[in-house]
Length: 517
Image (cartoon, rainbow, N blue to C red; front, side, top):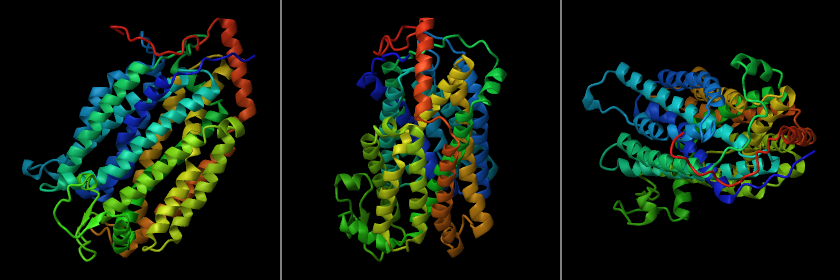
């Protein structure tokens, strides 16, 4: 027997979405630029950069389940998960700036000190990411028990995520180049990341003040973490989602670094200049035009013969990022009803299969085919976008499945173990890119434009990314939580709560914030 659930308000759904917008200001910076930031700005070797990317993220992956246990056992007037968004907001902003501050050569630091600084600040940032984003993700699973409302909530979330990704992917490199004028790239990175850090702080506070936890466990968690994990191992949908998450986030991390090098070293700079000239983003004048586009670093100054040191690749790469992200935002909004009609699992399998094809097609393009690169980016975004909301809604379904099977709810543990897989995927994806480039293509950070390295960027950006998309589709084939089973599970859980006198959706408005926790 199903119950009627009051819809979440627009304000609460929009407010919740701000939290992941903030997280993605860091996340997408890591995905798109961190690898090259360490090799190009810090001046680290490929193996050292791989280690700095790998070990902090592996530690973060181990910390996620610990954070899940802490969150599940947190009890405040604000709930279990929501307080962590508030508590981590200020430290997050501070450490974010430090992580993208390059030690000044005038300080006289040795290479070992620079490596230690990079490792420590990256580890701190990853730890704070877990302390904030794991409870934040779990929060979405306890704001409503209604399956369609969860999907809508995650649709709002991923519209905001993609707005943040639009900003990071479209503005970061031009802003870095802009603020580097009269200084250096290190200064440009520090100022740009300070802007993103301030935005993170504001967005986290919006999320905290506009959301409310509603789902209460029918029986409060009194089991040990070991028992929670043992029960999770019996959860087939959770196992499939853990494997999917590993492949998916490895793909995102690897693709970000590979595409940066693809557009900066494989794509033809003259063809990119002609593209930008066609859309009015070039000028032969070396002085500022005073336009908004120039203020954001989007104008390429000079002529077609002066491209070696220009920002042409930065601008074109940013336009590619923005085109994909803008398309994703539009398609997410247009595809909100797909999961209700076909089921989340079916949508995911179809979209990942199509994404495999569009990724592999990139390998076929010659360096001068910049318009085709843009078109393929847009097509890839169209087929990938519907997965964004449905996959995170499936994580909440996996938490429901455990409660359905065991009678106990441990949402934090479910999302923490998913977080473990996510961070492990990020770590392996970034490191694997450098390992494979160095091992199979002879990549040397001091010779990034060598022919063998360029072939590596091309292969990793397309064929290898396609293989990881295919692995995601296979994982979803093994997830047996289809539309019919999900609806049956939701109805039975709603009936259990009704009999136990637990109705999580009595009040759909945001909670007033008490003076103390």
